[in-house]
Length: 339
Image 1 (cartoon, helix red, strand yellow):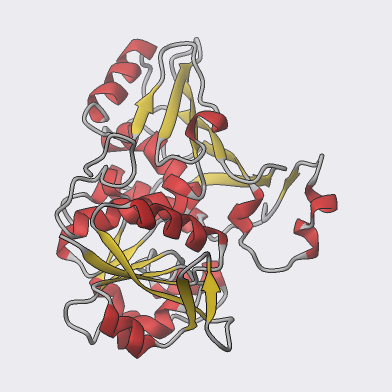
Image 2: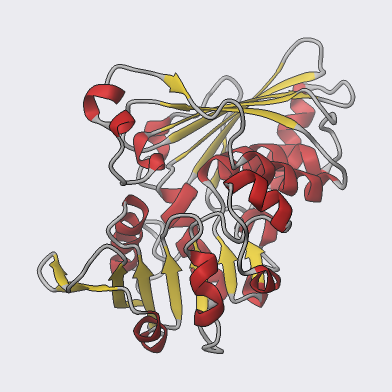
């Protein structure tokens, strides 16, 4: 099986990483590369052509289209693209992650213009929504911070072990997480040898995390989220401080995580005393998770590392594509995947 695929926004960091993965994917045939920035076609590499984006041409050539575009673009394009009855879409933006248009407006500062398409959308975190994803044509690829956070918290949330408040997420991302648009704050001399927090007063990923935690736990869970920018190209590290509803032993929490993720090919639960490293997950679709419980038995520290361009963006998008077309999830994403 060869799947005709297309990428819109291929000139961005996530789009380029996606193209790299798809070119080695044994069942993907890249049929369309588009960019909103181009005024005329250009050649990428030796033979690939990038075209000024044309929705009708893209839909006609592809069975699945990846939209690696800024927030606000996918909701403008999706209703028209979905008119092609067999076209599937994986959207990298936040346009279809939140189920409430009011929450979306508050988080992103814009009005949602495609509320009717929300019913087509599924939150594309395979480890949490695996059975639902193949039933939908529009997949909302999760944000990188929510991916690392939710994978670390899911086992505790599903068992109702997280207290309703007191949850703190301290996360740090490489500069590619901010996108490729020209920004003085992201210039080399501004970022090099620096570490800074940003959007401390409210990040658009906070309601995304709270929405999914509420679904897992069956009740509202609030969190304090502080993101940081670190001077590395790629990678994301999240440290989570979790107040538990009751006293537990670390061995019990470790057993819970190992049981929950036993069959997950991309999740690595590290041994006691070992902690995730960004270098270990760079260039992969993996998520490493480390666990620690303080002596009180009521406060857990969870550590989670992913590649923000891999499991946090392009790798996860391909994992979703594999699910949509009934392929093994590891296809094209691991050295030992199906060839």
